[in-house]
Image 1 (cartoon, rainbow, N blue to C red):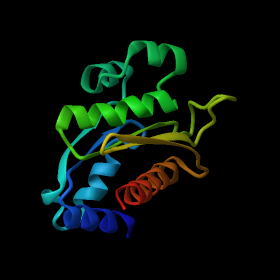
Image 2 (image 1 turned 90 degrees about the horizontal axis):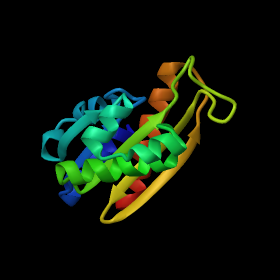
Image 3 (image 1 turned 90 degrees about the vertical axis):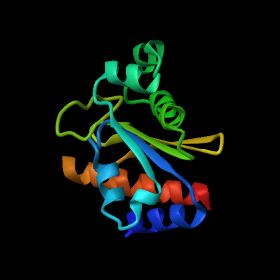
Image 4 (image 1 turned 180 degrees about the horizontal axis):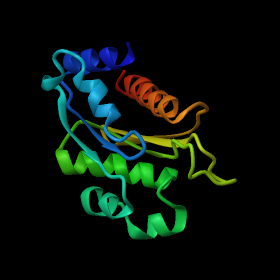
Amino acid sequence: MINEDLVNKLIEKKLKISTAESCTGGMLAERITQVPGASEIFEEAIVTYSNEAKMRELGVKSETLEKFGAVSSYTAYQMCTGICRHTGADIGIGVTGIAGPGGGTAEKPVGTVFIGICFSGRVQVIENHFDGSRDEVREKTCNKAFSAALEMIG
């Protein structure tokens, strides 16, 4: 499983991880902590479902939310860098999106998810368009976030 691969790689490299979640509602953290040994590498998770929480907990700028919206590459960028700054983790994952079944627009349909990963001063943001039910979108988000994090840490 991809979550086990990530946890084992982080243990091997002695790296700490934290997550900032919106549409996944804590699922990233739950899947990390399913893996034995996760306590060696897992720092913290923050679920920032509201814009206010994103600003307060992660330092997402109000201007970013006003101009680009909560579901944007800019917000994902600020979420992943904010969680690293907040927790001191080596790697931070920030996810924000529309899991559905409602909430989508023509510009940002259901299944639109931005995943930000911050590692060693580098940030990668990936725009995704997943299909499926709410649970499937959330599961696909976790899998994509974990695989992208694995690629980034090498």
